[in-house]
Image (cartoon, rainbow, N blue to C red; front, side, top):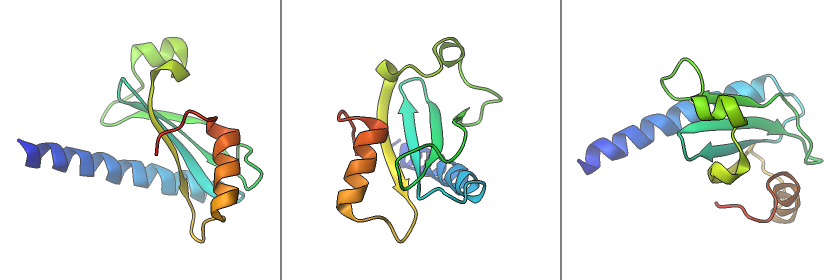
Length: 113
């Protein structure tokens, strides 16, 4: 059972990585991608610039689904339902201090890593 869960988690992360790469490809000013995982399984992602500003449109998706869930359609992925959020940095990543400043600006102080 644990192997199946690990395999599913790995597949999700692989798909997430593909989305991140696609977002960065279309965002020349992007130095990272904000990933917000919601409790329903949907995700919100967007590239972020070195100033901590959006560098792409927000993409919402759900693995193996044609569209996002009904709840997200209604509330656009309300922050109260955020399960996990982080920034996937492009290499070479900004300094730790810059990462903290950008994370604070983009995600606020209640982040999980």
